[in-house]
Length: 317
Length: 246
Image (cartoon, rainbow over the protein chains, first blue to last red):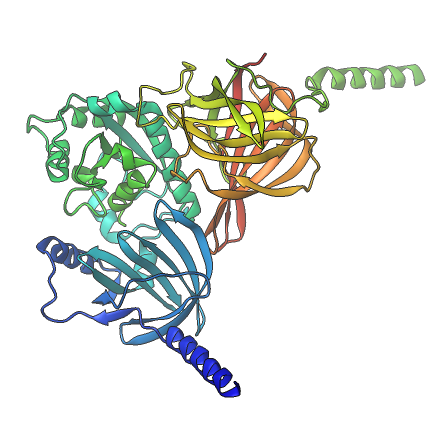
């Protein structure tokens, strides 16, 4: 009996050790298949000036985080041990959020959903992000906080020199203004049919400004007006953003004169059908006058923060 | 000389009194049903954005929404048949968005008895989606009372973040006699606070429900606690601008 008890204790001890030492990731072998879209997305993301180092990894196994779960972020040559200490809104729309304390000080915020694992890790003076890019591929990045601080919006006028130069001669306000960003919202007839547009746009304003507040960002948006535009939705994000942004292509051209009339910094088109939740033009992360446009799917605009998300891209995020 | 001094003093006092603003003395809280529930009753609100210190911000467009009791359903709860009222979101046209599937959320089911206001579930197009029986706002309220219940409305335009009906949040009675100012009058209210979204170490969102017994919800205030800077700032408020109760 004593022997059995000893064996059980040893098994329990080992099990705990195994869990405690579980690596989250494994390396990607040379033959790992990634789609061209994922590859392009990763390459585009990697060129962001804030990213100091990065690597691509895949999950070792399906994750099932819960309170007191332990594991190791084996990323960028480090083994960062963590333990889950808090759950946020469990199963909110299939997503789960967690706070984890790191063994060597600091903490991580982790979310899991059908799109995979996302994490932000603060370890002493280092900051890492883990993002799922599709096809099972995760990009782990070490963020240069000095570079991030350059673009940080405060009550002063702390915008990057680079962006200052690109916007200084425009008649519009800077897109990266730390003050109020003026937004003109266009809606299609399909949106009018399915939604009360005033409510929908009001919710977008609410969620965006609340997110800014929660994020300690002093910027805010103001909606100048909601205009119904005569447009038959294509359902394709690339097509819709191109038609929305391009002048004199025969589609949605009135948005440009309306933008001047209202003095809007940014124009957003809300559509009913889209093959993505939202899109900004290529190269518009940190937008200037001629590309400060985005298209957002109405059903995702407020409830999943897509309106805020796309504006965040235009503002440089 | 003495008469002159007295007359001068009286003149000053009269002058100062004439400058005094009209003092609003709201009626004290009385022991009425917390929220009058009857078919057709409605409450309309205007959303006002606030600066961190609580002063009002300017926004170009104005948003006005409300709640209307547009239907009833009798449900058996704990073996007892109880008339439940369906509380819908509406705009100034006072119609729930039955024909706008993108906005239409269905209704929240509520009833009231001597213990307070009960929240019993949600329905959409006459189909029950969630069922429970929570004492949401106990009344008579006692300051400091805390409890948990399902998430009710925390915003006049509805469930902005698509939080599931099953979400349970804490509630706390923080005051039984607070003054709340609206364009249609000042009301003394019972105040319940609900921290509905807590993602420490980032932020926590709290909503304060201001309820004038006998009239209903006269306002809601949202505040955000930001853990990194440890500041607690105002975000918005919804104030009653029109209502009909019977």
